[in-house]
Length: 282
Ligand SMILES: C[S@@+](CC[C@H](N)C(=O)[O-])C[C@H]1O[C@@H](n2cnc3c(N)ncnc32)[C@H](O)[C@@H]1O
Image (cartoon, rainbow, N blue to C red; front, side, top):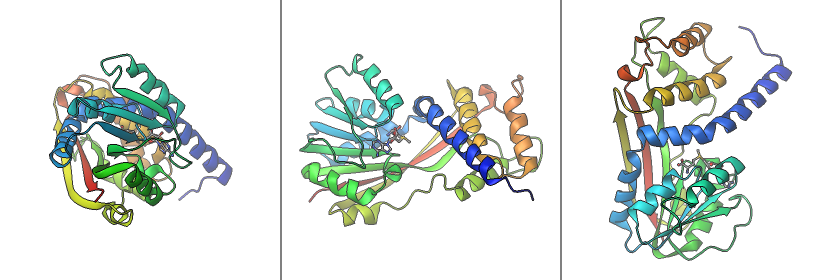
């Protein structure tokens, strides 16, 4: 087994991080276009538990896919979208002028630093962002302090990476995507903890937890684009952690744009799953 020179490994990690950051806004939007059926499902489930929602805070709002779904579910509500990444803030600013004009406020804020004055609010939404902050317990305690009594925090996470490939892709050993996911998990991807004890520790009462699986296709709009973007994104992290034969098989799949390609949209079924926790301020 060969080992990368530390300087090369550091450079590779830096290049991966730079690519990952550049890819992320487009990937978030593609994910919502293809697997976004979970969004109205989670917001409708939220509405079963929280009445009269007038103000929502979206922590780490990204490109605004959650903020949009929340504004649709709660037509009386203003959504405050908190974000710190310039590329995400630019996307959020771009949707301000659309159908959400007057309903969405973009707040340039770092959740790891002091928050701007915001509260009180009825709902705090943290989708795929809580695992990114330095101190999730502190963020949840601040979220609790923002809430009216009876208001709720909803934490949403991906409980599995999206899934595109059949077990047997027609070349190499079966189980390629499972091995990719295992290698990514070993590299720390998608390590989502159980947020229930952290929510409880922040003084919130966990009311419900639910999974939201989604399956789409074949022939779903943007599915091929999403699959290729996701697998390319993963591929950049797999150098040196996935066996050479599997890397070659993945590269072959990505290079094949023919009518019978495994990644051709007409053949592709996409699976995804989210898990959500809902906790109330007593
Ligand atoms: C994986 S994305 C999820 C975006 C969006 N919530 C969604 O569901 O598509 C995580 C987002 O959290 C943001 N984020 C992470 N840490 C943050 C922090 N300390 N302050 C503000 N935003 C943060 C990132 O910039 C990114 O946009």
